[in-house]
Length: 70
Image 1 (cartoon, rainbow, N blue to C red):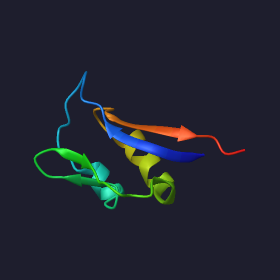
Image 2: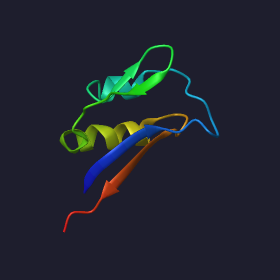
Image 3: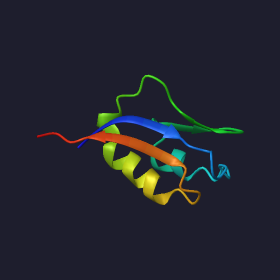
């Protein structure tokens, strides 16, 4: 698995600024008045942390795109 894209999808629900994603993956996420996915991050280096943030998000708004490696 290779994470190739990470984003915040607030179409259905809004971020509650809990900070869990930043706690799990501070290199990938920054939480201020809004949650941001940091730029210029090599997501493949943080696949485990990103997956944990996606699964742990109480609003289910963190999304990721993966590519399966053969």
